[in-house]
Amino acid sequence: MKTNERIALDTSAVILYFRGQPAACDFLSQAWEIYLPLIVVGELYLGLERSEQKTKRAHELDELLALANVLYPNLQTAWLYARIKMELLERGKPIPDNDIWIAAMAQQAELPLAARDEHFDFIESLDVVPL
Image (tube, rainbow, N blue to C red; front, side):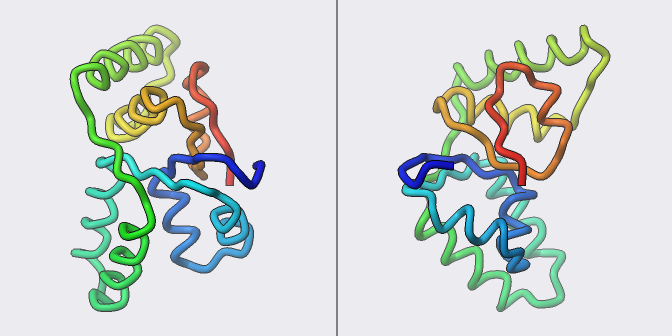
């Protein structure tokens, strides 16, 4: 990644960062702008609710949200979601719906998506940065 890039993060990328995985930490420290699709924020809040370390996890999430830009869905996002889902269904490569929404928001904002989940590679129109 170039040091001036903007990047959207999947939940899997954020989890690697929170766990202190060196490659994820180095990668994210080079990004000029970090974007979180609203779906990712929801998944992170779910992780917080399920955590036995709520105070620590809440602090991590608050710090990330202070640095990141949140991507919100709209009607164009819904249209992109439908196109991506249809393409995946036609090719027999279904993936979780939340990940389709995340991909649609990254595409709409013309951002690459940093992710560990390999099923994002099934979305041919998405620029995926594997972690």
